[in-house]
Length: 511
Image 1 (tube, rainbow, N blue to C red):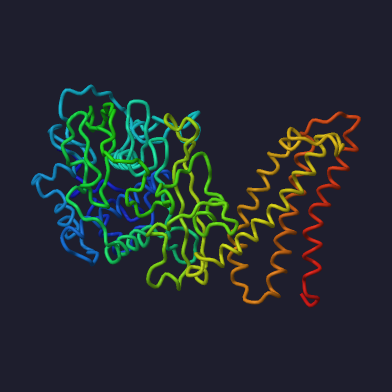
Image 2 (image 1 turned 180 degrees about the horizontal axis):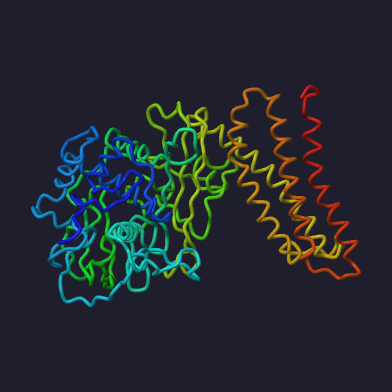
């Protein structure tokens, strides 16, 4: 056996190299703030894996306090694999394929295996045009590269051709979504990864009345060809494996991998909804389904739906993930909302549309206020303000596309405005949450209207810029262009002016 995670310092941090229990001890002490070799899209998988592993290990030995010594963590981790005196499940390369290795189920024999030369080729990331993150470039991958790739693949992957995906998503073409609250590094908007991990482990140990069952680490379980494990016998925090993978030692100390098709999902469920007890997953209140990101981003409209819903009832109601709720003294400190997942396109069974990540700073005064009726009302008002500016931009550009003839404006002309509207939406997206927190902090009606006016005027500036940028690219007969542009600009200003003028009349004279 080669590369034992319980003893060998295989994982690099900004504070040196650590074994797996050494890493957990260092994070308990708050010493780790970065994993230099961890690729951005691997962060949610790695964080969730370490949290699940930490809780399972400590809960298994009846411990509620996080130990800060490597030896104590080593003992706790070994408790999860007590049937393996040689620590086989914690070695990256096993000596006997019939026994488990790290995130690698036993080989039952008689299977057809294909070589995987690099850890990034093993990783779950698949893009439409190989441009989001290049594949198969890690020709000299270190052991930790294989560790990160295994965690990403086995706990996040969907269905792909002859390979089944995880159960912690709505379907094989969906995504495992992480929506959580995290502490920032002091004075920054960056996640404090040690404090985040400690926070999640402590919350789950202290507050979770979870389903505690014997099946926890699925990679140590035998996997005969075609066999499935019933979801009903799994611990709520089970660590999943969805692929048959084996790492092997190659020449000159390098590691290669082998993989074989998996036609049936490892876990059998009565109804595949993604509602697996995943403590980071948003779940619909009505149908009990996990969020599917699709090809979307975590923009302000989606996050508003997930956090507070809409006053007009147009959005589905979501149950908040356990780890999105503030706990303990977190209402007295700044926090971060972290939303991350893979986006999958219409042919999501064969590719992803890339990694989506959004980190939203939440001022300490807003942590206890960010859910409920008031933020829903305030957010709804901001969305309506954005819609007014967006409508003005749309109508102005559509009129240009119609040659300045209002009677001829039709659906194809409105379509010409779409790129500019998308650009305006990105500006609004960047402005949305600072505006939400600012409006929620207002305690008197007299302070609310000036904030709206400032927001509308700022967004109107962006609308004018996008109009100016878009106009030259809109087809229009040269004879009609001067008239079209003048009338289009007037339509834009008329739409912008209505909203701004109305608010100006409401602003008190002394503001």
